[in-house]
Length: 83
Image 1: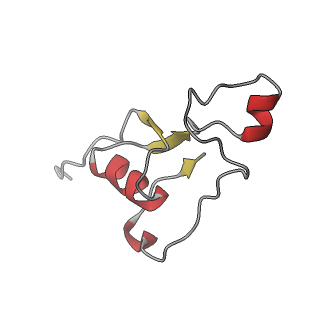
Image 2 (image 1 turned 120 degrees about the vertical axis):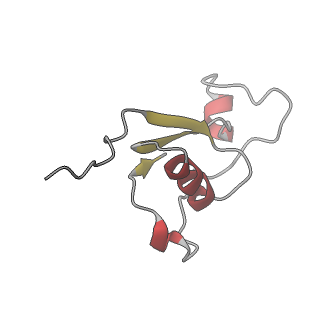
């Protein structure tokens, strides 16, 4: 069999949370060939800021932990992701 198959992806992409949806981030990572995506929580939680664990640098801190919600558009996503 001389059929050429693409090589498996050899990198895991890391991205900041930012302002787009998690599905958009994962889809973009998959589009550039990533094997998986790790989303870094670059937004400070208020309780962590009070404890001195992070600094929101003047931005509004979050009261709740982020949630990787499902917007129903993930049917074409095939790589794993985590926050």
